[in-house]
Figure (cartoon, helix red, strand yellow):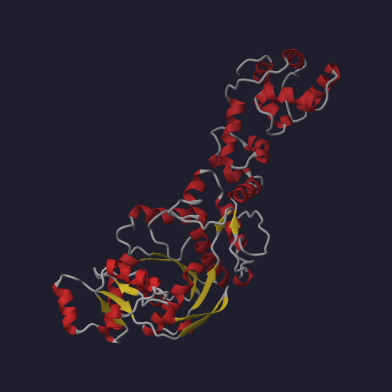
Length: 443
């Protein structure tokens, strides 16, 4: 069975960059009848927080990306310790005693000499006496994985055939000085033990993949048993990558701004492909057209205005039943049908309800004309034909037409130059309120 995973670190709220990883994993799992795993990679004890973890789950539920299975790395520390012992026993994990400052100086020296910045494996040359001396100083070792200096290759579902030589990468630290596992070890152990079949993530992990394939094999899983797909990273309009540390287009902010979750999904699912971005009514509609081969290796650009435009198209298709619970108390289907074509967000309906039901100071530009309009205002009951009949009579009486006829009326009745069709707005206002505003009164 296909089993994908989204593995965020709870060190911040989700932004559109890592939402893309979640969505692509979810879509592939749903298309293949597989399982979608949410795994919180919370081994960073200093920066991971329960609030961020809860926020990630809240964001995913709001987006509609419900997971089938759940795991938290902080619950699996014994599994990582057991894997580390296995690697030590096979000679693939070795103790290192350098301090961060010493490693920094060593890298600086490599740059000065024109060499590549990889760990020089000095720890492998330490004698038992030297190790004992470091221990006596109070140093605790961190543990590095001994890479094979050979070419690692895999056929990526997006990038095609990929190769990376082990000598170009430092032996990765898998266990920190305090005994806690790093992401590199924990991720591989989880992927093995939780049965992940496809690792779908950003291209910034390509080097990690070359390393992790060797760890997979050292722990007994064949690299051919797992598939990889590395998608290009989203950039903003200026070509800068999105970062959750900067809060770039965070999901929580977009939600607070009134963006529909399906608008985000509709855009992100097609970003980087040649498929048109179309407004969708439901997340499930995105599943049939999903395919890794459609994704380009070029970095797609995301303009926030694209989200707003798509959101407006989706809002214009929403039925009253879809939004009734989000509208002001008392708003009915007639009101929604009236204002819907002019909304970019559902939350904007509250402004028009305020205008139709609460006092508004009219914009009066021509008192004589408005007085003439008031004198011709029909008696109730009103319907959507009232506006046409009234303005026809007023046009004949005043010899006005076009903007000169309609704009003064709109400004007086709504205090705005643009908005829903007045034939629908006029019955919402009612005769008493409309008459008062034509007379220049706040009503």
